[in-house]
Image (cartoon, rainbow, N blue to C red; front, side, top):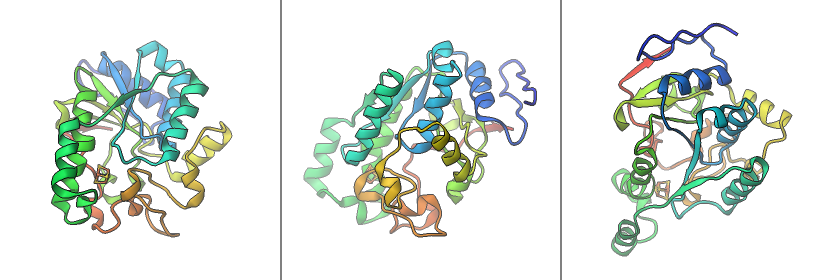
Length: 247
Ligand code: SF4
């Protein structure tokens, strides 16, 4: 494994490609404060939980695992959550949207307003995901995500460790950013990790039920999300532009 350098408050200098466990350790060390892992129960997130637990990083750094319950998740997602909780004896910190915001959305615009325009879709994501994420990150020194570069054009410029300009410059660790889909599945299969039953039905990126569908061969993983929108819009606002990056 290549050596990793941390200079004062600067971000760690990492080799390319960087090993996920090394990225995790370097990022957690650099953050030097409470950290949390954003878990959508994708296979990438399950791989990261396994890394944290098997390398002793969760205990060493007290890393929390949080999830956003948008109110529109698949039943299969809760099944994975339970499997994770049982396998690792792991508490999951769930965050829900503001009750009044969701009531206002449904009463005023109906149950599928997100299909009518990009603005309406963002309004739904803002209420159900973005606002709860701000609560989840409150008081945190940083967070960990399962994003990978090859998932979508919107993620091509990812760095293993970044400053999250959209959330006050806290550290954001993307340990799997260099990994291919094949590497993720090779690891998950070797470790027999829990995974959503939806993957067996052609889903590759799993979000809310009404905004996710299976992808066809040759399509990118994120093409099954908000399939009625163009590729450069396929983000929900959780991952905002970063202020600085190190690699
Ligand atoms: S993914 Fe769809 S249902 Fe979920 S918060 Fe965004 S617009 Fe709403």
